[in-house]
Image (cartoon, rainbow, N blue to C red; front, side, top):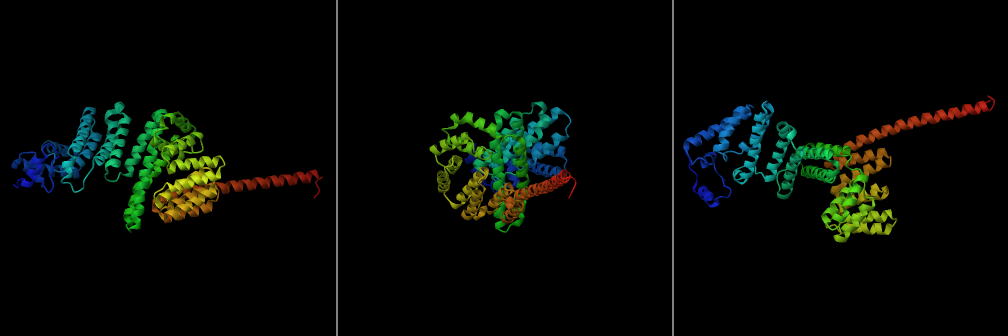
Length: 470
């Protein structure tokens, strides 16, 4: 039987209490590490690994569990499959089990397995072909907790713990990197946030609004990768990313639109109360400005107060746009242009200026300054051609508001053709435009019928009032 290499032994001794390093090790070496290199234990370990994997392939989760127990106790570093396949095994055992006590036992063991993987992550990564981060592990833990805890805990299930797990995972991935957060994960996270908001709307609204922006932004960033893949000629990857993130993005947007959380009067009331606490915190001010901008509160006095306070602390394009909108409302067009130009000056690149032009387009659209909004949509393209699809989609929205439905449809098609990342949104908008177009046609037809009836009625009245003579 092959013994542990000298280099590996030295690495382990040098690490002491630190994480073990199994780089370039064999399965036998990793089994032997936990069993004083006993040949019988190594032989048994190989057999248990084979039976564990075969039971999983056969969906025999009880047999898989028996082999899992030996590996977890005697060879915790043998294979990563103990940790990656184990949760799915427990998920199926929990769903099939009728005894509540046994369900709880499986659930506790599954949570213990996640903690064990977190503790051993560096050692497991040292020999894994695909490395994982703590954020990756916490993401999987959050989903399995959300799937199983309601079944196991019943009335004792606390949705806030599920939310905490998701939020912690997203934070870890954002801070320390990790593999792509899947669209389904983001969608589930937002559904959990939505459920908490519905249960406690008065105390969780602001966090819910931030969760919406974060989830939406994450989906849009992943869709941007689809655009990059398409530009590199990898059409299959681009289509896979769109399929993975467009539907969750649509579900997140629909869930949010139905929540009623974006009620402008309530948001204005919330941020009015918070102004004194936030007015010296630039991060809170800018976050609040973004939320108000995205929820039709950017014509309110409190929005302007936040913009003024933020601009005084640290001028940014967000606060400059707010001051431009205030100047526009006050009829100070010179000041409006000054602040819009200042917003562009505060950008460090044409790519950022393009994004700012889209933000300015949003502000002008909400203020019903449609000509100016169209102008800035085109400016966004001039600054950064990568924004062509997004700019065309905004122009489609503007033409829809103007009732120029065919032009809006044309811009939806142009947006889809220019940018795969907005193709889903453009298709949905186009479908809504066609419905509005059909309603308009029906209304026009009804109006014409009514006008014809009134005309006939007036003609008859004129006929009879004239003595019945033509």
